[in-house]
Length: 147
Image (cartoon, rainbow, N blue to C red; front, side, top):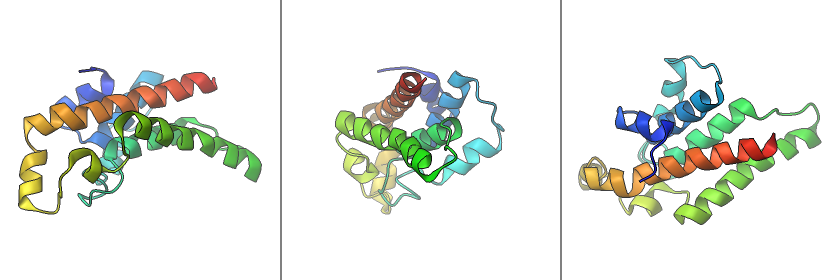
């Protein structure tokens, strides 16, 4: 299993979105508020508040890209800047098979059974940590390619 700054944060108890966001920011030397940055990512866990929607690792990666990618001064430049998020989504989905938490985990996190399963070590090892590692790597790859 790939280990990096993001997976190290996850091992410390951060959720997927927090882990990717913090890991990418640290890797790039982007100054962040250690209290605010994790909190803005917290509720994306479980696919936006356990709804199974977009994986928190994807959200964390896109948030990290948004902190680094210049938005541009014109509408055209702004739209061009968004292509990095489009490419991030494409690469993550290609590698992981989906960008949605429910598809990745096969769980309904709104049920007690789903929550029990997601909290188990097996799900973290087989799904969540690989998703966090992929999101982290893809975000950094895209930023390196853009520079």
